Length: 219
Image 1 (spheres, rainbow, N blue to C red):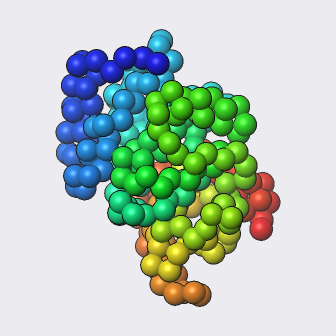
Image 2: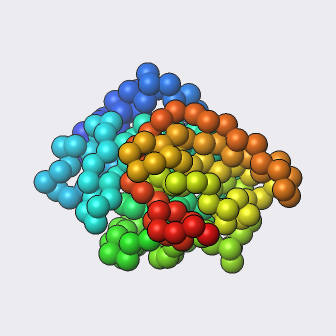
Image 3: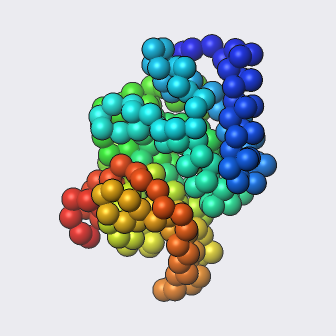
């Protein structure tokens, strides 16, 4: 594991200030970004890119999300320390570690088994105790539901009904929905057993959400 030096911490402070200028206001989210050493999610040759506000390939056709995107989605969740959070798409584990700065109860599911094994080893080395699973994230984790907050880090063609059903009443789902080239970020709140409110926000571009309730077949 790469050391977290004074220089790295200075670069994180600069990244936090950049995110603040771009509109991130939640100080707890900014502190979480400042606490997670993003360079430890990069191979040595690519570490100069770690604190740029951009996405970066991590292999298996996936990316580590742009820090602004991580902060934006996390801010929309409005996580409280007691919340139980489900992340769909573990990827590199960076977003997962940011969530763990805000609540200890983070469940994360990764579709790709190669990424899952790699990230599980990384988070163990970082001593970040998330509950990690390998499987079809579009179907959620019904055995551990309901969740107070659900975050999806891949673009879905529609709102996955299994995830809506696993949301606690009063809970929030943040998910990008659209086609394979552009998605609109949605904030969905479960108002009652059968009622959901929906807010459409900024446009983003994510890798596709794979699975039975994503790109790969309807539910």
